[in-house]
Length: 237
Image 1: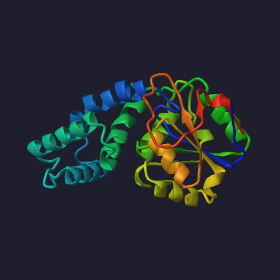
Image 2 (image 1 turned 30 degrees about the vertical axis):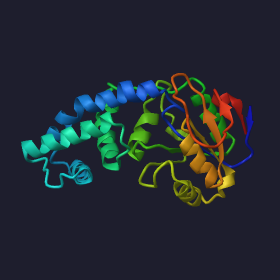
Image 3 (image 1 turned 135 degrees about the vertical axis):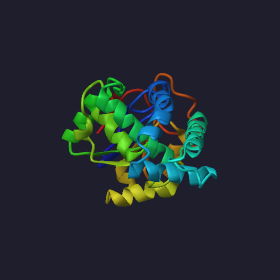
Image 4 (image 1 turned 90 degrees about the horizontal axis):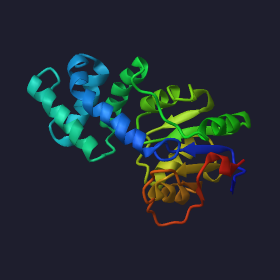
């Protein structure tokens, strides 16, 4: 049991609220399968063009254009390569979010969350805690994810979202920025994640931390010790 008397809870997604297998086997697979058709059909959309241009610049092909079939194929291959290597690329995450929007809105995708998550989010929100998400997935993707879960729309319990535009999840400065944005002292925030290096960074910034031990999670790694939990029901506020 973890007793926390602060004012906010910051949540990782993959391996914390939701299974790693859903993210990799369902969401990533859907994005890989759809990226070529998506970039072809949506190449005239300003947001898609901007994300594709940023991705092309990031991987060293700044001249690749979605209007040119050869250039578009370069962007597709670059996106697939980044996904295969699980690179936390901000423009890639933006593209994935747009692709997933189509999947969620069409009903092809329904998000997995662990059974203990919906009642905990409701309990925390009802008690006045400020509950927010910090994920490498884009803010748009996070909102879509929690709006289309098997348990229904959970976004009403969430006060905010952060992604890698705030900063890398393994750097203490990112958590300091989040605390400042929330207008709270870091010690008033409990960060929950399955990745030791992320928890280390949050602890270095002054946040309270706890390690998610969920089915299918990998060895968390990291340098510091973080109290483990298997269910959000183990967290007493």
